[in-house]
Amino acid sequence: MAKFTVVTPPDWSDPQNAKARIWCIENGITISTFATTPGFGNRTWEIQLNVNGRKITSPKEYGPSELYSKVFELYKFYYNKYNG
Image (tube, rainbow, N blue to C red):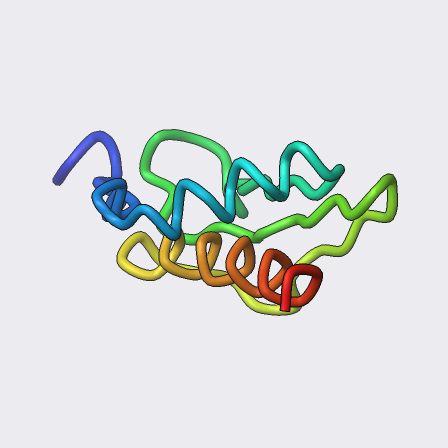
């Protein structure tokens, strides 16, 4: 049994991912991930958005293959929302 969980990394080659992430951070929108269980064997995470001091926690837990795709989907959502 593995001592840790391998998480699928974000697609750093997509320039839209970087652009949306940087824009969000510069404009007070940050996204964090929190393990739902202790230890290195954790298999699910919650996503917490901080939009200018207002914290919103995802109602769903995300697995290692979908975590960062969801994070960047949210960065792109907020970027597009305010830069329509």
